[in-house]
Image 1 (cartoon, rainbow, N blue to C red):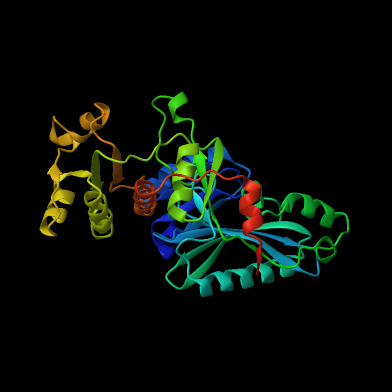
Image 2 (cartoon, rainbow, N blue to C red; image 1 turned 30 degrees about the horizontal axis):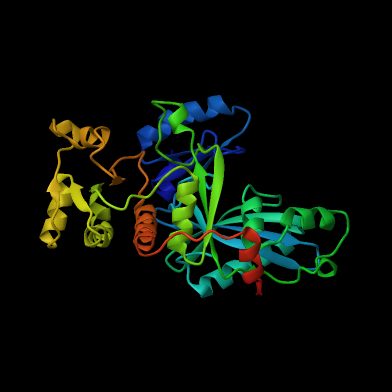
Amino acid sequence: LEIARRIGYPVLVRPSYVLGGRAMELVYDQEALQHYMTHAVAASPEHPVLIDKFLDDAIELDVDALADGERVVIGGIMEHIERAGVHSGDSACALPPKSVPAELQDEIRRQTVRLAEALKVRGLMNVQFAVKGRDIYVLEVNPRASRTVPFVSKAVGVPLAKLAARVMVGRKLGEMGLVSEALPRHVSVKESVFPFNKFPGVDTLLGPEMKSTGEVMGIDGSFGLAYAKAQLGSGVRLPDHGRVFISVRDEDKESVFPIAERLQRMGFQIVATRGTAAHFQNRGLAAEVVNKVQEGSPHAAEAIQNGEIAMVINTPTGARSHADIAGADAAVEGIELLRDRDLEVRALQEYQAAGDGKG
């Protein structure tokens, strides 16, 4: 409790060694931390509990790299679509990064190389970074293959696992022809697949504990269409018309406004709870008001259950919620491009042959 008070809430708490974010939680106050400690110790009594300051609204990135003791080559840098706080296995991600400036990407590359050299890595390494403003934070370093390796290998056309295996038996990257990072000219988006339709009633809120059971990827020349393809692969078809329900916490109202504007320009009807609707109306954007569940029928949940809502953008206030404005922005970008053009189907090898730029 003293550590949490000193570094400030919210904090990320977890047993000292977990896989898939097991028993990892974000806690926002002392009462929640006290409740968690009992659960965490029961889940892993032989390990201490780690408490970290949580970076709210930070951009998370994954970097896969390959080292042979003489050379370190970046496999790929992936930007998570969902903000930090959602498990990396559950977050969609884009390669190359969508919104991180080039100079910050270069600094991340430099730090990755330094880490691999300091740790004397032979083979694959994964580093998770968070970027907030101009500051770069190292979240985790794993001198091993990550679940992202198959995605990165397909995205950049480099068989990272095969090369890593050869490095581990004494081969050098240079003699195998890998001397610099492959920089594809296309965009690849990974999306997670969730089993929620198989388990009615399960908690669908995403957080530090991994819930996905699979992955798909979409590739195109633009982020929007690559994201749309990834959504389609995961079983989600982005709507091209209908009513969009928007209800966001106060701190997200300003950032969701341009998203609502873009949706309305495309012909979508905006439906919002009172506070969100008032913010839109004050800015000159028409919005139909709908009740929250606790305000009585007819309310938003009924409209969703009745199939009257094509899309939901919701960032509720509360300790268990995670803002998803970035995900909404990505979806709208995909919808905009889908309205203007058809999806292009190409062989993976065509993308890789066209995108063999080197760093």
